[in-house]
Length: 414
View 1: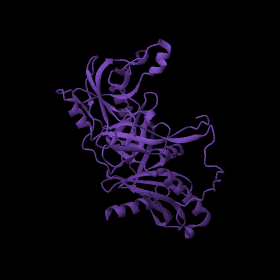
View 2: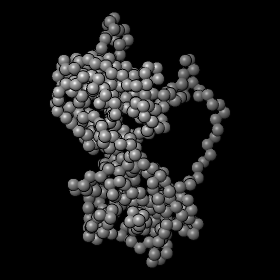
View 3: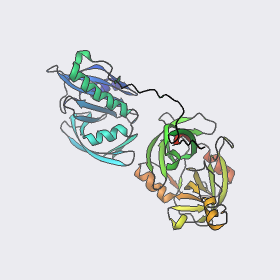
View 4: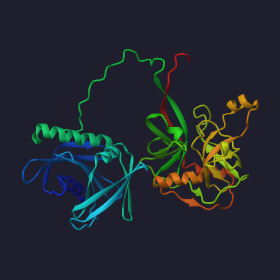
């Protein structure tokens, strides 16, 4: 009951910054877990603002508002907050581990901090999948599911109420769209783009369901990106951040998914000649639906042209292994499988077909990427060596098939 009351109160309190007296909601904004509508100023009865709010498991309620003057606000509310009215705080927000901004918030109510959002922050907030908010020592994660349509609905709310009045408030999530012409032919012409299935591998690196894979595994995906643990139903994953230069991507499972087991990253450098185990889903749909396990050694501590970001490994890998975990003999992560040498291209130049020359991204690069994405991963010291069967068994609960539909050029000559 307290949650519903606080949600309603939070919407009421977000009119012009500092005005707490409001009535509503008039009409409705209902997108995903976001609820809200239009509100009026209690003293004058005039339209004040449109707001929507959603609660999080961390105990914080997020509130987004646009007032009649067009100013956007973002508020953090909680029954546990005890602010002095007028107290100020700086809140640093990071979106998808990349774009950052500093918001300056004020406690107009004892249980809520409210900050004005500049338009550039609103646009980023609208597109992002994850927001990390830091104030002092407090660090909070917010899944920004449905923020795109809720921002659009609030903007529509302000526009409609200003034009038609509060008495005609309705469902502000219904936004008129221009009819799209129906194509004469359903077959894509030559040179256009067509969807194809693609897949790779990923592995869970935190109890919060953060999943590492290669950027090239998800690059070009349209629609949902799905993850499958062997023998379990698929789940829709969202992109948290990506790094095309280092070929890394971070995905996250739905909040309803739980992971008791996840990979630990080796906290000590690996050496040339050390044994390694690669696990992944090569040629999915053609070979087994289960993951495959290959073994080998670290052949070199650098990749092509002495690129120190990579390991060269002898364990065989194929298309579909990309993004998969590379383990040492104790079962700790020592790299992310990223690809193999282009054998036919090398053969055309040298006359010889190279064998067992494959590459993995080093853990130093991986850890920098995870740190920048504010992921609570864990490290571990190498322990006693395990049998390959045990390493594979331990990896089963967190090694995942990643799949999606991607766009490719349609070619009439195929």
